[in-house]
Image (cartoon, rainbow, N blue to C red; front, side, top):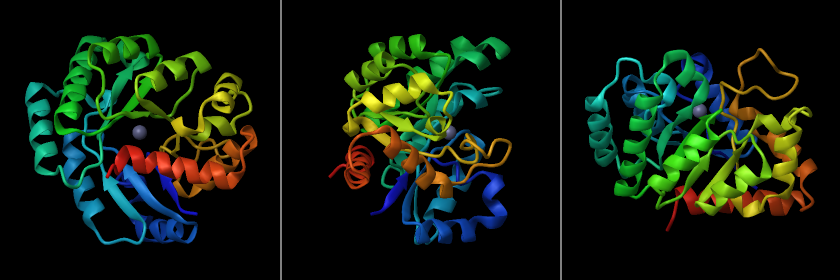
Amino acid sequence: MPFTDSHCHIDFTEFQDDLTRILADCYQKNILTIIAPAVAPKYWQRLLDLCAMPSQCKLYPCLGIHPWYLTGLNEQDLLRLAEHAIEHLENIVAIGEIGLDGVIAKQQDNLKQQLDFFEFQLYLANQVQKPVIIHHRRSHNELIEQLKKVPVEHGGVIHGFSGSFQQASNYIDMGFKLGIGGTITYPRAEKTIKAVARLPLSALVLETDAPAMPIAGEQGKYNSPLRLPNIFHALCQIRTESPELIEHTIEENVKQLFFPM
Ligand SMILES: [Zn+2]
């Protein structure tokens, strides 16, 4: 059965020297699809070019502006995003990575800018009929508030989900899937593990967030899309369904969200 890494920053320089080998190894491990979110305007073209290269492991780009990369950006960058999204509509599978980061908001005092950028990108996703990929950190309340203001019309992923069953259920009710990543490989992530055990399988997708979010035992190293099977095995241990059913359902979830017929 094929796997999809629904969130991997394969365009980051950490992978540059080794990319051909990594993608060949992904193919060997049956990781046949990688969804690659964008983070900042200056990297959009590199990401689009990379995803256009022939590869057995298929790379699909997204376009967006991540809340960590807002310094020096303004409305013009949002307008450029809209132009780029329309120009590359056939290739991109989502608007992302977008979102709200409570830690950065405090450090950089930029909550207002984060909210403005997030809101614009939610509207844009609805306009171009794409799902969104959402980053969150200490921001569940603000996120829910924004998402009530601008409900997504084509779904999305709450990427790197960590939180309670109730928080997860709120997102599912709003049309989201939850990106399940390396967090569940850490036994101390009890609240998230308990939530993931109970959530409907139809709401889950797998992701590595590589090169970020190393799995348990690999702290301090770069993460890799090749760790996706480790996350899948951790998920299988948490869930009661068979691995076959889990894998099948999760791939269907990916198709439904990113590759609707
Ligand atoms: Zn990311």
